[in-house]
Length: 230
Image (cartoon, rainbow, N blue to C red):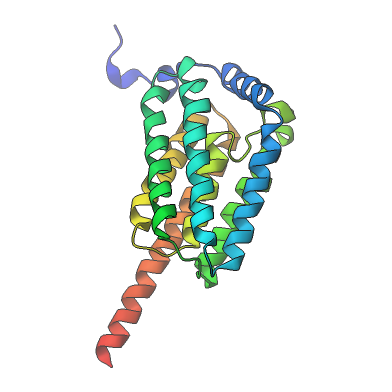
């Protein structure tokens, strides 16, 4: 029997890349043309952020809440768990994120007034999640049928949420950040283990988001020091 340290990450995979991407094809075929509705929801999210004032933040949080719960149930619980038993334990986390977003929608707990580098980083991540992520499948020769679409599959949904949260302020924000960030890390690790170059997408979204958060923390600290000196 081989010692545990002789195993590689690939040895713990429960599925092949072919099975993994076939899962997306089946999921897309089962839900089409719902993709058009979720992409429209993504555009509405951008419009609501651009408005800033008013009750738009509540509707935005509600849209994301519904999509997180839907993706957790339809993809992770009903689809991904059939090839990866761990997905059944991750699906509740998506439900938790959805509930947190629903609470935010009731309390009007977000304000979208971020500008500067952090705001532009949020728009960049959000834009890629909506328009860039679906293009990765055909660009890598898999065809449109295995594309990952916002509100349908986890990666673009989590990345778009990170982008939205970078553009927001609110007391409940720290509770909303961990789950999408952890999913991006987990997805990146899974894709990397399969040898898929697409792993850079969730990794890049996570790195950009973390860098933006660190920038925000440093800036707040600097401003606090200046205020104390005056």
